[in-house]
Image 1 (spheres, rainbow, N blue to C red):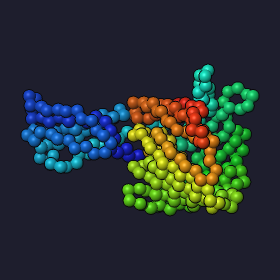
Image 2 (spheres, one colour):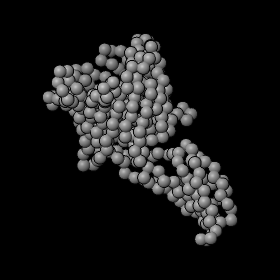
Image 3 (cartoon, rainbow, N blue to C red):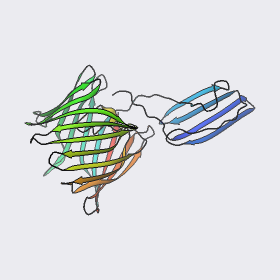
Image 4 (cartoon, rainbow, N blue to C red):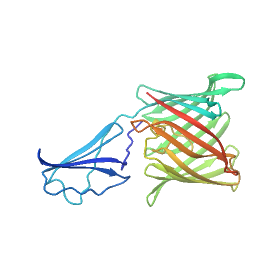
Length: 317
């Protein structure tokens, strides 16, 4: 769990200019995402800028000599990240919410993700039962592998990572006796950071998967298979903290790579397509900027008709 920078956040900026106790000027200004031009009076001795957000305060004070016309003022604050402890999933029915699954997150003494335990429903058996366990292994602080076990503690798969200059270069994923190999290249296209992955599947087929990132979020992707199928998507995000991003949990498709929470997606398919797709994400956040719960609505891909909604609850340490 390394440092994550959340930049250019919307909020309220408090500006104050003073000469003495009797000569004071102040304003509260709405900050949009990005930069904001702020005008202050010229004839004061000291200027203070303060933003309170997510239970931290970022502030800076400048003298008249330090504050020059047209200069950019940057406000910064740091805090320890919250650790995701548990994720609960419920299906919404006419009778209320029905528990569907639960995921538990455990950490080692260095604060890194050590184990993820998955609990799910079983047919004709009440309650949620342990189904899978993922164990995380590190070398020199980098995630080396994830080993997967069934409820009987028998290993049934693994994901192994190789790095080049601190970035994932290759992933080998094994599920029972089936293996998927992938290799990645990184580039810059204008304002977008691009990751291109080449995948070799267990059946001998292959596909190329291209992801584009902007401001720390995956904003589009495109996959083209060797058999002619394809899939593409565009994505929009909120400005709050994605707890999955802070886990350091890598996978074949960079599923946890976005810094913020997904609010909207638009998917297109060539060839096979899913019967059900999500189309609405409704988040409730805590005072620290983390999601406390989210409602996700699903509809039929071809019919575009609403089908059901689930609720996820996030519990932190």
